[in-house]
Image 1 (cartoon, rainbow, N blue to C red):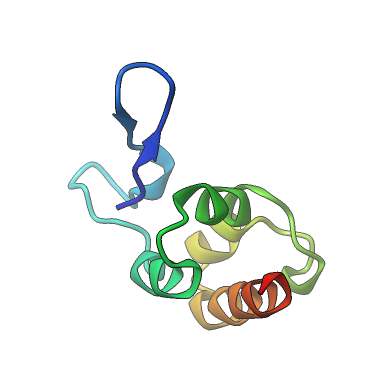
Image 2: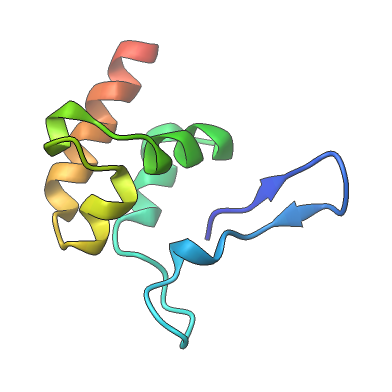
Length: 83
């Protein structure tokens, strides 16, 4: 699960990271944590921004459409260029 710390009220857990009402997280979230390490805001930005390599879709849209491998590859590419 992605937990974002804010200035007030501790951690927030975005509802969009869940597939359905059962609380199942989006596929690929564990891998994104491995790629970006202890940087939840980097994961958040990756998931919310549109990426040309994902055909202009956001990371969330790509994961929800089942393109987990492409999403993980895009995240690795971004992570490699930021180091």
